[in-house]
Image (cartoon, rainbow, N blue to C red; front, side, top):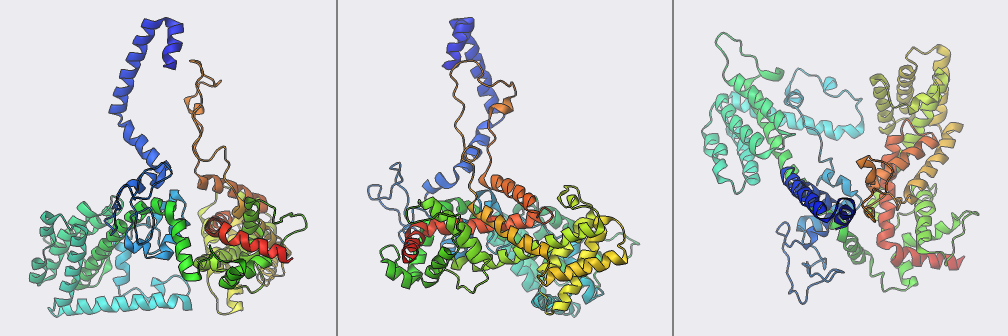
Length: 620
């Protein structure tokens, strides 16, 4: 209507009406041809997360009870929603999610933009495929133990080595049995594969003929086994796997076909360097079974990512209810009862008062936001992450013990590595500016990863740690300088490295203080209210453009996610504090620390932390 009014003034009513009519027809045609509605709908669904999903009953068929509309729980807008009576939550989710408290907590700590990376087993849902050649390497007996494990042996690697050895021994027995014309064990593996694949296609009985157990039972040669595997692999690659995973399965299928039908006169060469046909059949079965299990995980992880937006909306209430079941009903308790109920949290809050700086003015009259900022900065960073005193973990953070230990460990590694990198630059005279460069050679990047790996690894002896770190920082310094170091430079580098590892280096002490400043910044950081979220559209008061530029992209404000905004701000802070070279690692754990303490303040800030802070302040 506003456009029409402007056109009426410019070209007249009739002409204006015709222009608008034609423009509308062109616009509707363009919307239809470009399928623009689906794209916009996807954007809106993503922005508003689970608000729409929460209105959909029985999302994954979980057991729930639907109340009558008159008795149903209602949203703020008065819309009735489904209620799970057991959990008293306005949501209907799978029991295997709701019964896993640690998984729900992990989801609440995950940024909405990372929901698609969630997985049941804690690994990245977007982990890359293992190619057949890489997978088959463990089945090659000519490869020595040391060649299979490039990394130095250590006690923490031992369980993995034992598991790999037992796995290989198991497959060896199956291959040896096949060599003696005993196919019972390989039949069991193939039937397990078929069962797994049928579970992924329960309603597609028309495809079950590809995975017939009768074909398995009748197979009595390696050629029969290859035929069964080709059919199963074809079904897996074309009907079950994602486009990202299917190519590696097809690669093995083509290899099986080529090996199963050699040309006349060609020597029979077993693929991937495997020593026998039987072991190749066993290894191929293991690989396709591995890919089927990955597909099953992908399906489960997808359902998890679909449930995550809903849990983000109701998960805090879920956690508070579980907390009350394990620790007691804090909401109706007196201060004395709460102090007895949550002794570790009470001790933590009391120690916060001693951390109050002279320049900080925090009283019982301070507002809630100021109190929670103090908890996030002094209380969590100084009192938990970097405390030098023995302190029992507060009950409100018990689900985060493992993550907090990981944050401490990573922060320690980043400080040590940053101090060593600064010494390396000064000793080799390349200048510290090279550490903030966006362009690094492969040699420098590999040396950086090697140093970080050595610092993260557990060492049984101090001299072993010192020797490995000296070797790693020497390689990094050489890569940065692009030359061999002189004897004097090597000696200076070794002395500084030992001082850093023994905690007496002044650069280390400086960075140790700075890393605490970074974590205070990260944990107290708040999104810019102007740039975060969705801004209202510009008001059109007339038919004229209210912006001076003709660039359409400038007329729309760029919408940033909270996580993008945080990462940008954190990167600037790491550059300012001198952690540029290992900044990405520090930013990652800084984000994790922020999410942990923010969730704790959201869940227990008003009912527990604020009340205990009042009691602690009054005591002093």
